Length: 180
Image (cartoon, rainbow, N blue to C red):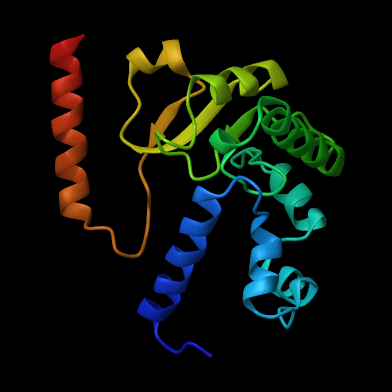
């Protein structure tokens, strides 16, 4: 077992690289292969993941919005268009059927400029999503209203430096207000 966070991060980055670079890899199958079929997916899903009942309960809170991702978390840009469409559409349908509500938001797997682009944004729109989140860093501004299916976001982690974050937000807000 890996005791240290940096070891876990190295393994995560290795798996991430494999998934990003290979269109035929299903991330869950890859994990099972890495752990030589000793990885008990059901145990970890039950122990560490929210159940549909948990998600449905959270969705009833007016301060909580449930969004979609995809079915298997594959890099959409590497998939054929029909495969990417299926990943997006099936995820939306599955969540909606489990929480009995419309799902209008999507966060793209990996979400960087090489993993999602115009095609993926169009597929999300065709699936009925109203808003999409990438992993591109940034604040949202009025100018984003033209590209609401490709919004940036700010990643909140335990490593965040609050002073630097505040400074970045102020700089970007000032810069954007000067460009408008």
